[in-house]
Image (cartoon, rainbow, N blue to C red):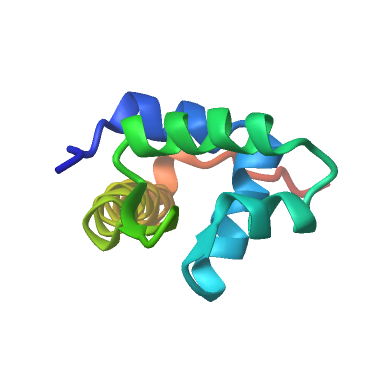
Length: 112
């Protein structure tokens, strides 16, 4: 079982090809050949990208006859979402604190 790695996951999604692979896998599980048909890269290149996504804990695979099917790892995707929710919560609290600052800290306008 591949374990989610936050640093690797964010780095993995920094590449547009890997993001495209994730988008394809969000629709349904696919084999390397199916992914290569959807992307402007070779099968070996798709395999390399899948390896990085798998190492990051975002993708899992299973044998299906003579090929391997790849799918998103629900646990890895959920962990990334949890991180984003944490960041979003902090941003909202910061915004709330800024809005609720005492009026004395805000600049005043002088009347002519």
